[in-house]
Each structure stands twice: as structure tokens, then as C-alpha cells.
Image (cartoon, rainbow, N blue to C red; front, side, top):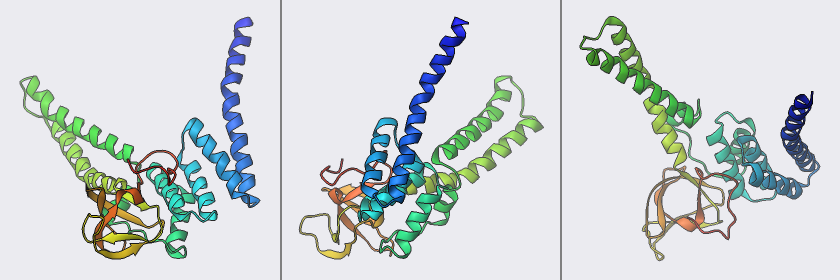
Length: 254
């Protein structure tokens, strides 16, 4: 009896933090719905710092940031939420609103990026590893036994090779989705050269998303939604693939 009581007490203790987090999340949701976006964001940020930010929490933070007029931080939250869960509805709705009526430019997803968004990046990697091991074992096991590949081994090898061919575009698309960044500053110049005195080609708005290539001299080579390419200061960009809430403007680019 004493052992049962101890087990029940341990279960209650482990469940109470989760229940407390749910209560705090619900309170933040009520504050957001009442129009107090600052209080909601503060509560959600505290939760993210304590237990880490999942896709739903980041999406909610993005909504609060958008209401507060911080487009760059909102876009970072929504983009990171979609990397964690490509089907997160709040983040998808937020990005659609920002692109349609919010004045934010975001590159349209290419076919392999849309394909990659069918599953999380970790799931594609797991499928690729499973297919690779299946092919390797189907090829190696008969040879280790001094035999030829039988019909079963050929079928497994063919299925594994087909799976790898289907997964490859998703891995490429996932890699490209992870190599995006959000402009954190208003009217940031896209330059012809990666120098302080580089000729401005156009101005990026706060929250604009770009595909990011190589870096040089404190600048990153980017491609914008309209196809324009040039150099932008690293200090103005925040990579989408980082973890957690967006960093403050006082934090320099890593």
C-alpha cells in the first residue's frame, strides 16, 4: 500500500508541471484574445525559455509579434514553426496573410520544397537512412555468405533504390528550406558587392524572406522573392533554422 501511494505521489508530481504549463498557455491565449498581445507574448516567451519552443508555441508567438507591429520577429516565428511542423495551421495562415496583405515578400516554394514540406526533415532523413541500410544489407549479406543475390534480395534492393530516389528531392528541398533568413530591419539595402560602400540595388522591407547562399566580409549572398540577387549584411538577417524564439535586435548575428 505504501509503495502504491509513493507511485501515485510521483505521478502527481510529474503531471503537475505539465498542468501548470497548460494553465499558463491558456491564460496567455485569453490575454491575446482580449487584445493584450504584449502580456500574451511575455507569457509564451517565458514558457519557451523554460521548456523549449514547439511549433504551436512559435506560431502563437508569431501572431502576437505581428499584432505588435514587429514583422521581422513574427516571420521568424512562423518560419521556424513550419520547419518543425510543415502542416502547422496557425503558422501557415500567418505566412499567407503576411505575403498577401502584410507587405512582406517571401519566395514561393519550389516543387521540391513543397515536396519536402510533406514530412518533417527528420522523417525524410530517417527514411533515407532506412532505405540506404536496406539496400546495403540486401547487397552485402549474400556476399558475406558466399552466395549470389536471390530474388528476394533483388526485390529489397530495388525497393530501397526506389525509395532513395523518391527521398532525394525531399532532402534537397529540406536543405533549401533550412537555408532561408528573415530581414530584421526596415529598408535594408540589397547591395551589388559585399562591402560597406556597395551599390544599393533595392531596399528590403522588415520581415522579407530570402534564400541565403555563401557569406563574405560580413555579408550574405541572397536571392529574394522577385528573383533579385545580391548581398545583405549578416547583422540584418536572422536564419530560420535556428532554434527557439527570435533573438532581439541587440543580439548580433552569430
